[in-house]
Amino acid sequence: METKIQKFKALGKNEPLLQKYYQANQKEYIRKRFKAVKLLWEGKSQMSVAISIGCGYASLHRWTTALIENGMEEGLKELAKPRSFEKKQALDQSKKKTLKRIIVKKRPSDYGIDRQIWTAETIAAVIKKKWGIELKDSRIYEILDELGLSYQKAHRDYAEAETRSQKSFVKLLKKNLKESRTWGECPFLR
Image 1 (cartoon, one colour):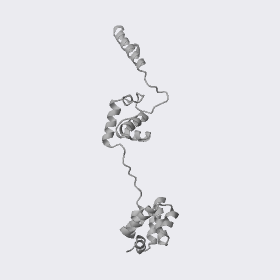
Image 2 (image 1 turned 30 degrees about the horizontal axis):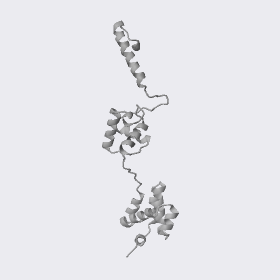
Image 3 (image 1 turned 180 degrees about the vertical axis):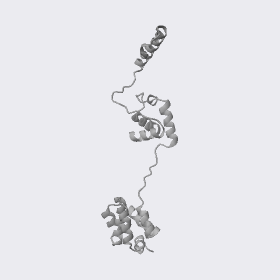
Image 4 (image 1 turned 90 degrees about the vertical axis):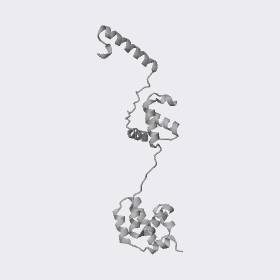
């Protein structure tokens, strides 16, 4: 039974084709794959190649398998493909809809957070409390954008509203509006 490295060597060398792919790809992580192929053609062991180019043995195994299964031309094309990072999103669409409903209809204080204003920090705290998912502020802003919600950057001088002060202001405003109907002018609308 033929080993994988024997099958690889049976493919033969095609240095001009390898050089063509090497020159066409400027990313170092892709070039590293072609260097590994060249070193294997030169008779180096898989372990020494993995150490010299700084890759894992499993990666080297994947690259040689791609060449063996696809042939030289197609195998090199396969090695030239860039990495793809598709990370599964922690919040699926239903959770995002629920989050939007929470932000629009509720307050952070409804979730045991001592705030009345939604910030990235408070949204992240609610997400962690509700679903056990930790997200960074930058991801919170992306999610808000996806949900069609705008955000305002908080400032140091923004303070939490004092309920007692708000109530007295509203009471004074109503009183002044009532008087203004009598006297014809509201002092707040000048």
